[in-house]
Length: 489
Image (tube, rainbow, N blue to C red; front, side):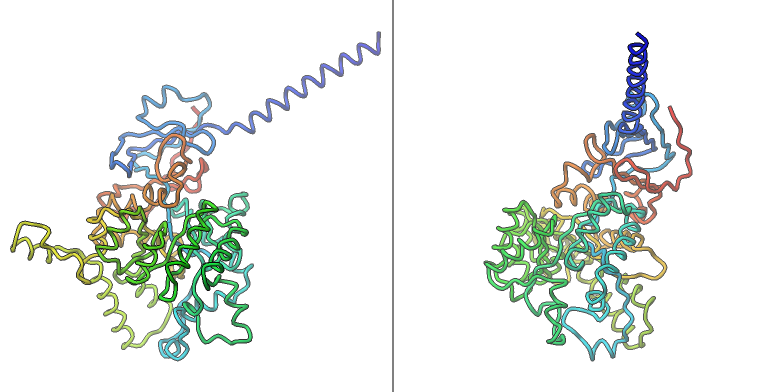
């Protein structure tokens, strides 16, 4: 009997302990719901502003969005409230074209650059390739954290990361080892030999090149290149379309990538390369600076995205250059002329439109295909799908990588794009281009709780994007500069 009582006591103790462990596990596995309150919430897709606004977050997803009375009526017990006061909420920003594992410093004087020109690569970029892959990943980790702190919650890294630097960095971020944005990695860039680097030491040329590129030499080799990147676990294939790349070769890349359910982003700047990308059926064309009206129409009809990168618009690159190098008066004047040429390429059509309007009220008289007319204006008129990326790989003294990146987005507005379309280009549009429209790009139930907040109205002042004060990724507060105390309901 005594032994029976002992066993009963042990059974009760075990049952009680198990119950406590189960409750503790349930408490740990069920994150505290979060209610984010703000004066305004902008929906980029519709342009609608909800004021005031509340967002209920459970775990890493958005549960409900609506006015305070509606959402708070169903607020779970114990929910945590983050009150952002008079702020404006936006979806987390998306940089759809970046290079996080490069942090170039332009330090070589113009005479040396002229004497040691090496294809399309500046000496600083070439130096990055020959640096230790481990060092580059650690640089990338810093760049990723700085991007996230500035409100960029998703990036698509398009090359220049070594063999596996970006895929490893992505996996480390996903595992929680480093703070950083959601990350689409492309691995090594596919290109034709000689497109970027020439005149390397023959004894070590292949070893250097294979760290950064996979070379397309015929359709069969193109398919093999895609499989090599697929083996590394990439999320997207990046191809540089130069004059020597043929339509059949690029088509083979795209067919093989699509077989593996991977999108293909094609770097194409000049008209010939853009046409190659269009004819082969790219998913997105990166840059597209010289796209004609006919090419924009073809892209629209085929559903090809144009990923605009107006990093060089205005004097942005000149300011970064001047901050890192002592330059001659001759080069300074030359760079100023180059800045003006970039403005001329993108500038709006007001004067041209006015001249044509005086001639006839028929807008069809405006000649949009002149080289001095605005690419941005023609993109808007064409109806082609578009997004925007920073193409960032530079060190800008006095700025973090994130601060440098977000300072490029207002260039789109300066070039003639309405503020709402700029915001769409780096939220809803970019999410669709990446194929992640079901996960990110909008503050909607079921999507990841990726939110940013600014003090003012970004529609009235697009440079509010440079002053993000609150950042949340997946329900986790990365930064809160509003100084509001969170409280338990």
